[in-house]
Image 1 (spheres, rainbow, N blue to C red):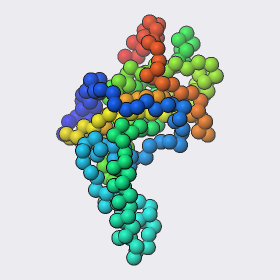
Image 2: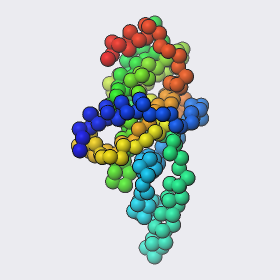
Image 3: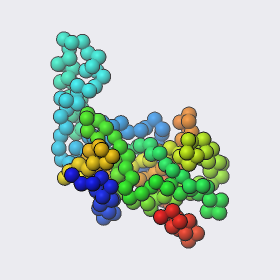
Image 4: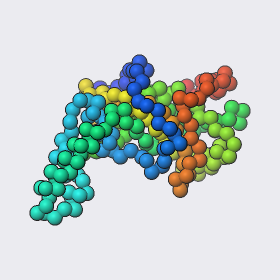
Length: 238
């Protein structure tokens, strides 16, 4: 079993040469309530691995099964398993994943009007767990999307969230990621847990206020090349 950090780094390198597959999701359509459940991430992993999950076992985890009367449990298990199998068959392999990430932001740059996400690295991942299995969604080229261009009142709102965190630097970033492919060869161990790896590409980033209203959103694919000054600022954090 590979060392976790090394395996994540190698997967990030492989992502750089993978062809684009997913259709771009309009960031305006992304809502805070749209966070992707762990079961969907698990299904995507199996979809890319060209395998089928154990739907009967998964059915046992459903609330419908758990809440069914004893005499109805077998029928409910079978019904839920068929429902899960149908959902799996209809799932597009390039399904978008919407997930929160605990971003560490630099001080706001008044000159360049933006933040650097200090923990957007080649070894970053977003963890999910379902049915006793752990999944790591590994974003493609996160280091190239460290710069967040934020202007006006949005910068003030984000800075308020940042300073209100325990560290004075953390802000929840809601990422929309296009799933790409699964590393089905083996699991990797990270901090004592075994993970199945699912590669993805960041398509949009948003920050929401505590009530779920959007404060700011950005489409990394649509950003113009950063300026020389911004690149120099980024270099200070590498």
